[in-house]
Length: 196
Image (cartoon, rainbow, N blue to C red; front, side, top):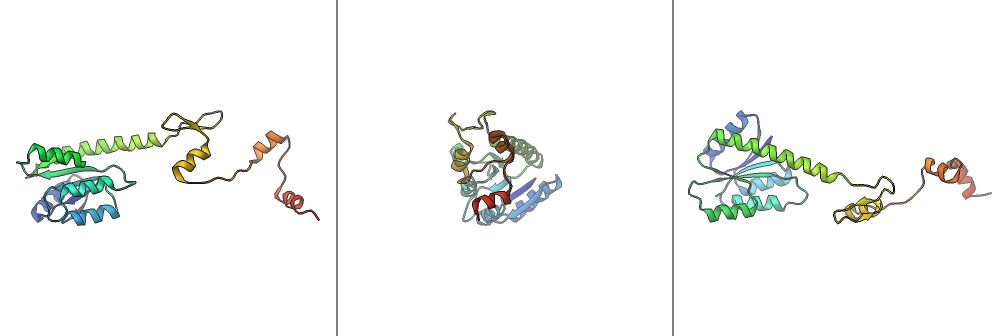
């Protein structure tokens, strides 16, 4: 799994990086919140482990930016905290979108277990996204049911969700079924469209 670390303390970064690489993760390191955001915005990862207190952009602001980035797959966000972090601060962090907390100094076994949980949750999120991408379509009239339980034409549904427009034609099989004969060839269509 690719993990972004946002931490301004060099020793903490090295310990965390070596721990994560030792258990098989790919690690991207950022020295502060601004650098972490720039790296994430350029190439989103699925897990971020961030220090709470950093100069400039702190861990909470980084988390809020990640949550507000449009069209981004869910990112599991772990915040590193001091042992004496109060409940109100933890509640604020949860409101900002933080998924999990780890206290410093880090316990290698604990972070490995938390990342296994993160991997499981991200897999569930992926499965849900796939299920949401399945469209309920009527096998007879080919209308699609939207989230409001309204059945609409495929063209209307796709236009509403993507902005795409359609032009209509008729395929050879439907032409034969509807008109009882095979469709004219392109050369026949050109001749009939431009009579001499």
